[in-house]
Amino acid sequence: MLSTQNHYDYMPWRRRPKITWPGGARVAFWVAPNIEHYELYPPPNPRRPPWPRPLPDVSGYSWRDYGNRVGFWRMADVMAKHGVRGSVSLNVAVCDHYPEIIERCCELEWELFSHGTYNTRYFYGMTEDQQRAVIRENRETILRASGQSLDGWLTPAISNDEATQHILAEEGIKYTLDLLHDDQPTPITVRSGKPLVSIPYSLEVNDVPLLVIRNTPPDRFAAICKAQFDQLYEEGAESGTVMCMPLHPFLIGQPHRIAALDEVLRHVTGHDKVWLATGREIAAHYTQHHLAAHQAWIAEGTP
Amino acid sequence: MSGLPADYLEYPLRKRGMDHEIYPYRALPTAKPVQWQGGARVALWITVHVGHFPMDMPLKPFIAPGGMERPYPSFWDYTQRDYGNRIGIYRMMKAMAARKLTATALLSAALAPLYPVLMDDIEAAGWEPACAGLDMGHLHHGQVPEAEEAATVKQAAALLRARFGDAVRGWHSPAHSESPRTLDLVAAEGFDWTSGWLNDDMPYGMATASGPLLAMPVPQDLADQRTLQQQNMATEDFCNAVLAAHAALDAEAAATGGGRILTLSVTPWLMGQPHRIRAFGAMLDAILEKGSVWNATGSAIAEAWRAQQR
Image (cartoon, rainbow over all chains, first blue to last red; front, top):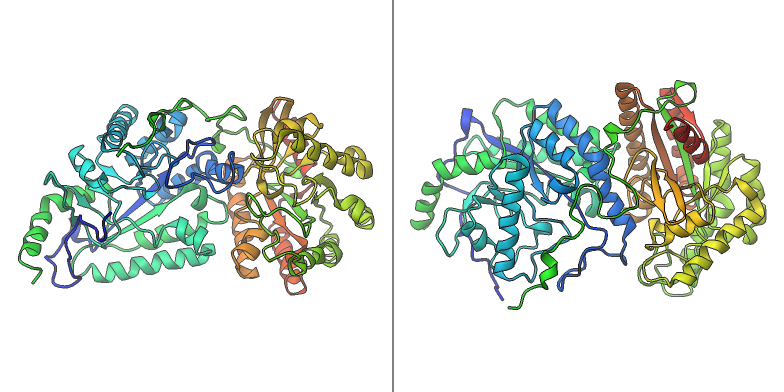
């Protein structure tokens, strides 16, 4: 078993080589809606039960089902109103179950990346070949459903196993969200030496931990997201930062919360030095313009 | 490493629509718009959880929200919940009567013989009686033997019908928990609508082995039991969230030309406390002041919805 992570080098939050974003933006702001399907009768996984109650967990299942029936549509309308595209953390089986959702995402020119097949199929305990098979199948499904290449990855329920990042790089994934170590993109070290990068996701300004675990009322949720943005905007004057706002339609798309999303997006888009980007765009810009400088700085001992 | 069984990577139910046969997928924007009485934009459905929490309730396989959290005998938990059926509900009745509002009582059926006077007063208040199972100690879930569950549904329906007759049309699965058979058993007992599933803001049809049921929306995410008791939120935060939901639903109804439903999921042992009842009244006032509200029982809303699907 590992006792420390083995995918990135220590990069102190001072004197880093400067990141510049397109248009002189200070913050690359991206929204990652998790569009998911949780199965009513998922198979067991040795390390994690899929539902807290005996199957069928009607409470858990139907709450998440709300996201696909109701919440997604409401959330997508608010994002479109502010001209904010989504980068969808997609359980790719949604392409088969609810093609109308994928159609709406494509119409809005959202990016689709993979969040596994179902959110009830964890990577815990899979062989490398099994993980590889899922990634390949997900790539084919996203291409078939949207014509897009699969560039980004968030392991379902963040259940990434020891080998997962290595396999992602070998399968041509360009950016990973499985690691939560930074407010900027960073290089990821993998056994093949392929250029995988991490871009910031978030479990802080993420509606699941905030609303379900930390019991945050809607107006506090908006205030926390705005505070996160304000600080990253300020620090971004020195070197470009990234703010990710992960969403889950079954939570943010509830009628009592949708105004909070509206307020956050109004706040963010009211600033002029913001790059409203997708995950793919952030990863590509960083890989092309800044990855080498970061790697060189690490090689020099982060002076 | 041997990895996971091969069928962990097989998905026999991966197809268009749901991974079950209970209802088809429906995106809310594609639902047929409905008109409420008087052209109201929002139907206000007040659901009051009138529960009985037996002191000897099972604590496995999970404790029902609001269940006995402390060692037996938890007079601590029991009497607080019982307070709701003695005091809190009367405060709520008064607050609603003062505003000429009606409600649907989601009743633990065991209360019918336990507190017959309360049943009389619920009827006198003009509230609709609906069945929320036998009591909070008889949850429906996948580990309950089939015969036992069938007997529980039958007993619960019989107890409430003995008191209220045919007025009992709705079933609410306690703790929003069900077994694979619950809906079949509920439909077989002749219920019209059910409110255990949390997946919509509007009614939709469910298929069971015993005929159709109408799914009615009762939110858990915006229930006082979840926010005030489980999540320890302030009363003001709960009330503000309800008003935010109303504002969003009202705006959506105006934009789409189809009525929406604002369901209040409230609990006498919580909302009927002296320190909360004024906030409850103020919240109702704020909803009514916005206008274009049709307050009705679950069965009345279900009937209005059904009549417009033909």
